[in-house]
Image 1 (cartoon, rainbow, N blue to C red):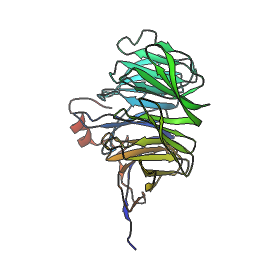
Image 2: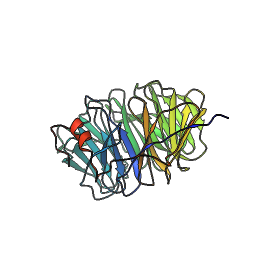
Image 3: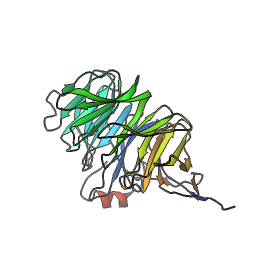
Image 4: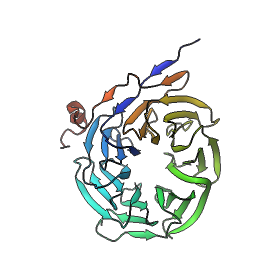
Length: 335
């Protein structure tokens, strides 16, 4: 019997509480980057390829539920339980602006053109902030039917989507009119919604199901049952032929998009997996867990298994790699 080839993930320490959201930047002239949100209130920025810590965004006074980077990875945003969303300089770590809300902010997303920031949370209101006029009152979109869990932009910033923590479905809103134009129906609340890099698909996780929707006509393309309740799913961005899912059983599974066949299963986390995301080139993917770690896995297909019994531990916030920062931010100052 052929022995399975065992590979190990990069293990990124630094957070002291569960990691609840991950976001990869597109590829920039300086590479690509990964930002993580945690209940410890401090989002962290890392080199997306090596996992090395670059900096920590300090200023929130409550759990951070969502994080994102703009198209050029020059600014970061975060949504927090401290009733605020914050805008950060991703090069220096400085807080650029704090957007006050009246309740917990659960989700945030930059528009594709980077001029707008979308937020949503327990207030059941979608807000669009103009980053060119950060002190101006936000535009408020028609009230959501429930507490907002996820938000995203699509159709070149002409449409926004959101899902609710307390009801099923994904709602599509026309930005110009502020009205709901379509609803993707699911039985369970959607805990993860991702628009594919090519704009063709919306990937959702609800209950123990991962679904793929046509992002232009909104029909259901594929639906696959998972072996456990999944909290997050992500479609491989380059070829679109694979996807990953993670959830309560602590494993990250790799599947064939066309058949739904499981083609990889990765064990290493010591708590439920809250978020999974493919890197922009699809060569690796990251997972964040209740155990407070981020793990970066290589995308392997075939008779392989991945576990972290001897996993390399990359630099945490107390062990900043001088070489990595020098190559990435030669003339910048990251604390």
